[in-house]
Image (cartoon, rainbow, N blue to C red; front, side, top):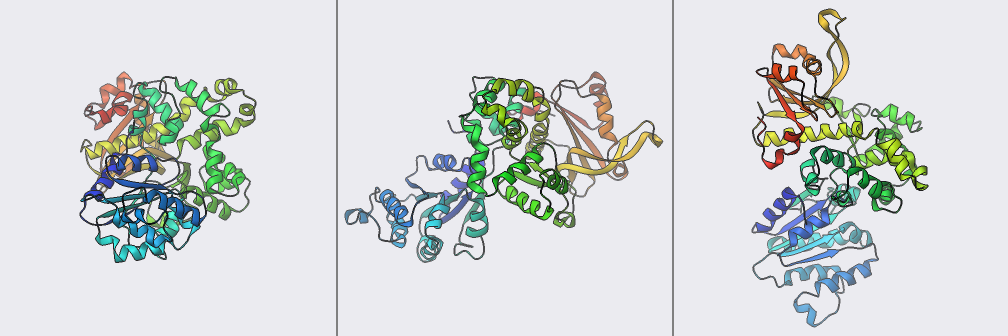
Length: 489
């Protein structure tokens, strides 16, 4: 059963319906589900789906010819393979699809170009002369991020400016990922998402009939299962110097976020080298460089500013628990690693993913105009602000702190301050007061609203005093099941 990807399929369908030639570039990191999405799109449409292999140019051409000549095109009567790529690509116009678009997908297109770097030029000439004015749709798909972004889509490339659509696929959000486990409890859906993230290939490894703990033990920690060697496989596919990358990823997974700190704990003396390694991980979609939601352009341009975090939840889980206990796992001590290393910290580990889910929840609310105002930007906030301190003057002092979620109105006249609590206790009124103390100086000229998100509800005092104070309370049930259409306000 195919799950999710409504936006991607909607984009492709809209291009397919347009009455003109289409050259679509669709790319994204490995395992994100590009091929499955394209196959779903091609269902019930006449098409050619060619998957490139890491082979010589001649072998690639023979395979492409064989697949194209399976269609009822005139050349089939005379040849068993095309003599060159120009003739092969030109034969796309002969596909016998009547009034329907001549749809062809070339999956892992970088492999084709690696065997013959003139492929983009050949396609460009054919596109300009014939294909762009024909009823065709060519989709070039690739996982090699550096090639797709720095070469195929770069100004120097012959195909630059020819694409009629460019779509970068990223991992699924929480609401699509949760559809893989419809019978799980709300809490377990958060835990699974915290462990696997939104990569369909990872989500498919878990058995919905098993508990979260059994799935982790059988499908991540047990030597020989697919996910046991996944991170190592992906890094070797995409990068050199994997021992250095292992060290950097582990450091970030264990809580280091600043460039200097990451460099020191990874034992890399030169921070400029660490910055390059991190940049490569950012391009792969494993790490992101994050700034406070109100950061200005000048701050973002400073290479020493910002914090780093793992965007791939599975990488974060593996490097926090699997990689750190690899020797024991190699010895087969799966139950021991889970019982003593993972189980005590899994709930706390999931708190960061819960914050991501809450931000996605707020984005969904904005789409339905269900917020008190429309924010212009929203994300995590970090900086110096007032915090509660009974010993300080006026009960407040200034300190470095963060806000889990801050939505800022267009004219900075309205703010939505969000606090997320994923813990085995209700959200307390005193914790709300801590949240309400932040950004106090801005309250003189702006209106503030508060959104409190809690796994285990709210204490009685908070529920009573929140009424009429521009405070929105969201329980786990409301957050997890919002996409089903439940009313939250």
